[in-house]
Amino acid sequence: MITVLEYPREGEEAALQAHCSLWEYWSLEETKKSLLDPRYHLLVARATDSEPWVGSLLYWVGIEHGELLYIFTDPQHRNQGVARALFSHMEMQLQSLSSCKEICLEVRASNHAAQALYRTLHLKETRIRKKYYADGEDAVIFTKETRRQ
Image 1 (cartoon, helix red, strand yellow):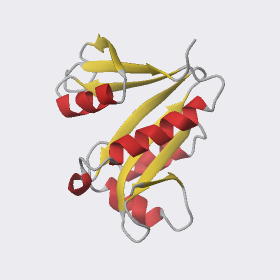
Image 2 (cartoon, rainbow, N blue to C red):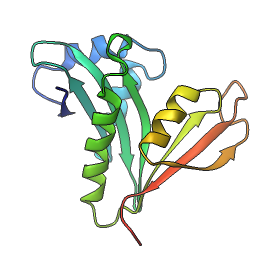
Image 3 (cartoon, one colour):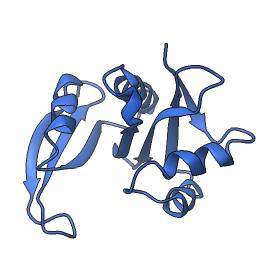
C-alpha cells in the first residue's frame, strides 16, 4: 500500500536529498527554493514507513488552477500505482479549494508513457506549445477540471 504525505516532515532533509539525486529534472536546490513559497506543495510517497520515498509530486496552486510541475516514481517502483496515488492526493487537495477550477501540466511530446498515464487519470490534451523546452522540443498541455462549472 502506498502512503502519500506532504513534505516537509521533521527530519526529512536527507530523504529529500536522496530522492532528488535519483533524477535530473529538478535539483535539490531548485526544489528547496520552490518550497519556500507557500503556493508550492511537495507530496511524497512511501511503500512502508521504513523505506525511502518511492515517488514525489510537486505542484503549484494559482488563483484558479493547480499546475503539476513534476511527478516522479523511483524506477524500481514503477507500474505499482505510485504516480496514481500521488496524483489522486493532489487532486483531492485542489478540489478542496473553492477557487481551483482545473489542473494543468506540460509534458514533453516524446514522453509517451507520461501522456498515457495522464490520459488514464482523465486529463485531456488541450494544445501544443511549440519549442517549449530548452532543446526545442514541443510540450503537450493537458488539463482536467477539478469541479463541474
